Image 1 (cartoon, one colour):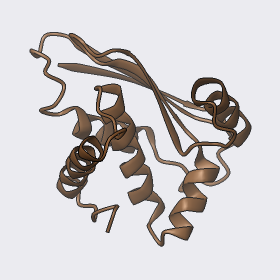
Image 2 (tube, rainbow, N blue to C red; image 1 turned 90 degrees about the vertical axis):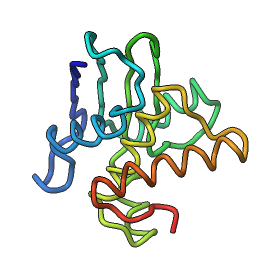
Image 3 (cartoon, helix red, strand yellow; image 1 turned 135 degrees about the horizontal axis):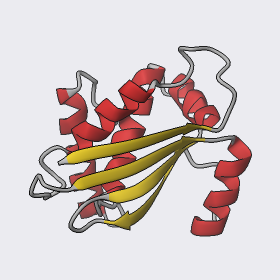
Length: 153
C-alpha cells in the first residue's frame, strides 16, 4: 500500500511547535491505517489533512452536521473500498483549548484526533454504545503503539 498524504496549513504558523508537522501527521495516519484498511498492498490510500480556522471548521460542521460550533476534527470519506480516500479537517484553536482543559500534551491530543478521524475515513463510527466502545478500544491500541496514554482515562 502507498499512502499519499496532503497537508494544508490554512492558518498562520505562529510557532513551529504549535502545529503538528507533516511527518507527525503522516505517522499518525499510517498507524491508524496499518492492518485495518483491508488493502491488498497494490493500491494507494489518499488523505488530505487541512488545519483550518475556527470559522471554516464551524461553517463545515454546520453545513454537514447541523452543529453550530467548530468541531475538533471532521472526517469526509470519499471511498473506503478498495482503498481509503478522504479529507480530515482539524481545528487547531479547538484542539489547543481541549488539550489545555484535559491536561494533555498538544501532540497527544493531535495524535488522538488524527487517529480518530482516520478511523472514521475507514468506516468506523461511535453512534451506538457498542460501536463507540469498539472504536475507542481501537484508538487506544493504536495510540499505545505510538507511545501515547489512553486518551479516555
